[in-house]
Length: 161
Image (cartoon, rainbow, N blue to C red; front, top):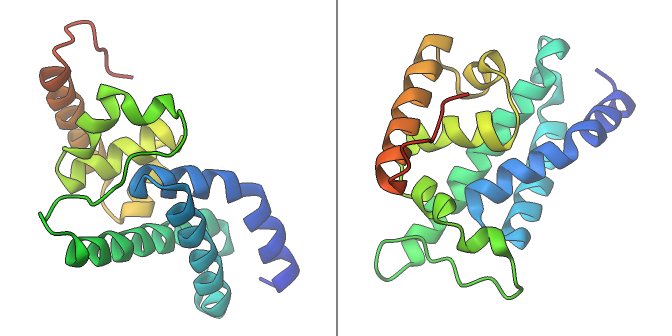
């Protein structure tokens, strides 16, 4: 894959990468930084991409690793061991939704599946590839996550998709 094709492909998925990073990190500035770092790392490692048809999965995996790196960095600097996310400066309604907090409290393996499947719009196979796990594991984690969210939110009408 040449650099021009790389740039074109990144441009087509840039908003998807940003949404994914924002859901992982919770702050616009951190999400933008993670996407920038991901694009930089991917460009540096472009020659290692053996199958260009898996470009989106490959770059998503780089993004997830970058988000994990940032979350680990945050946890080292937080005093109470929890996410040290300040309150949003603007009136962002999404930040106050009980669903967002419930998703943040899910175990990491379940939270990853929920973010990729329901918020970033990945298919089962794309999610499995991005997380490097079998599709059956994605389905199992998705069911467990939805069950836990139903319990936490107390919604009997919460249906699986």
